[in-house]
Image: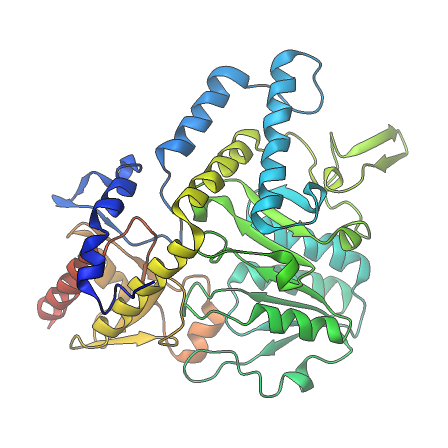
Length: 419
């Protein structure tokens, strides 16, 4: 595929198809503060296509009932749709069976589930949990909590100056004391794409369990848990065109079978007495209470939609926009971009030499440009880099080359405005 960054004619030739895709997203067709909306906050949450909205409406208008526990027609239809969604997720990530898919509220809950259920059962004093210095708080704080309870210790893979993992001393970090290696697939701050296959392989070689935080990758590239060789993988639906409040934990069957429940309640039990209970097999064991039925159905619809767009095409498009933005922002007076140049995920973080990111982001909002300003749940790394926060532009397949050019013009105007 030609690179739209360095081939404007190629990008322009795709304008009609991009325009058709944009028409699927009602929210994009509005003005904000008197200017057409440019939505570049996709790493925080993506917008929802009409196909997903229609799937939610159809469920609530036709099939709304609780799942697994009813004998009537609506419950049976809701259950069939819910379990179809589980099978769709398994197919989407190439799990060996739907039983390896646990529905959660999102990546954060999935990580907490593994930390407390698996970690609570298997971590002991002296064990090591290996993370990286670029982890989102959601893939840091749960491990801190379980380490405090079990006596396990945290260890971190450092970064190079350009924002890549420094694997030169991995052998000294990934020792037999390491029971779990957890890492982000794509950094939500730096845009770094980590070598997931190699990291999972290295973890397996020392007997460690591997956990991949795929929150920033699941909606942008093709995921294959078998090819990755991971034991766990988690992502959130709302970052890939699905509703909020629905997420996925993939767990390799043999590992899920070892895990005790994390939460107790209805649906996850086989039998309950006043003094004891027995539990269902995975995944039901980890889905206590009424699940987010509509969210799962919406997630399946989002996955169907993404397949029609093409995940390879999405990855190429998003990375191309990010590289173009990276190179162009670096040329504007006063700005510094962060993270590796290439390859990178579909986002760019940057700072201005004299303008606080909050002020810069607010200025951009007045021009209809939605960026993210803050620490992006990466406070330890921000602190290490001497940064209070950054501005971040994050892209998705419905964003266009011309929108990036408009952002560049706004950033240049901001430099003059705050000078």
